[in-house]
Amino acid sequence: MTQNDAVFAGSIPQLYDRHLGPALFAPYAADLAVRLAGFGGGRLLETAAGTGIVTAALAAALPDAAIVATDLNQPMLDHAAAKPGLDRVEFRQADAMALPFPDRSFDAVVCQFGVMFMPDRPAAYREAARVLRGGGRFLFNVWSPVPENPVVAVLLRALSALHPRQESWFLERTPHGHGDPAAIAADLAAAGLTAEAIGTRVLPSPVASAAGLAMGFCQGTPMRAEIEALEPGGLDRATAAAAAAIAAEYGPGPFEAPMSARVVEVTLRRR
Image 1 (tube, helix red, strand yellow):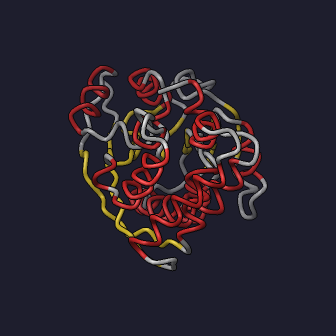
Image 2: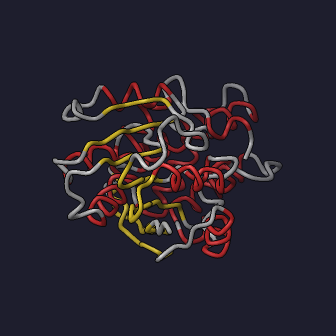
Image 3: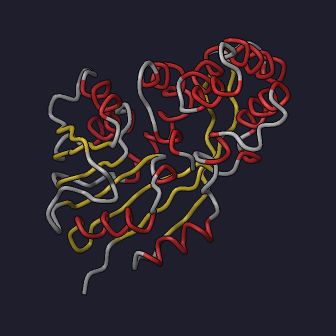
């Protein structure tokens, strides 16, 4: 992961939320919320909350829970905190690898598509365990590799045709670069944890338009800086090429495309 792979600033939060939120993140947010059914009125911590897509799903599904949503990027939290219906959520900037909370202060920790951005994932898992009470649940998901997410593969092929010397792209390097179940299990083991389940969840991505999805990927993620560094002034050209490739495969939209992620469930066992 490069230094810029975790930077979500400027107009990125708005574009990310508008163009990628409904298509990619909302379906998996609902999936995580369902897995916490029956949670009740405990304390729940969300790390890497981003623009609050999972936060909103959790708040709707768990009306009695006390929710604290954290993220390293303050611009993402600012965007999330401005959303309606989240007034009861406490938003706080925090590093998931060094959480500013006491030991055993939460009943559940949830992280959607965030651990891939953490330079030391075992440290983040140890922190999740530290703040959990005995019997607490730790749920997180990560994207499966690019070949299991065909619309991403189409987009990256288009960008690679424009920039054939680019050795790797943000999307394959970071979001889709940490979906190996064996590696996930090894990172958890390094933190003293064992997953009850590391499953693959395939869901439909409800895409409003090929152009919007390309805009979200190319201009609403850290790949924006990557493209601009390769070709100053070429961001719109790259976005148009990506949109054309997606439309050629799926039509201009609306359409559905399959997407795949690993979902990990851990229950903390204390002696």
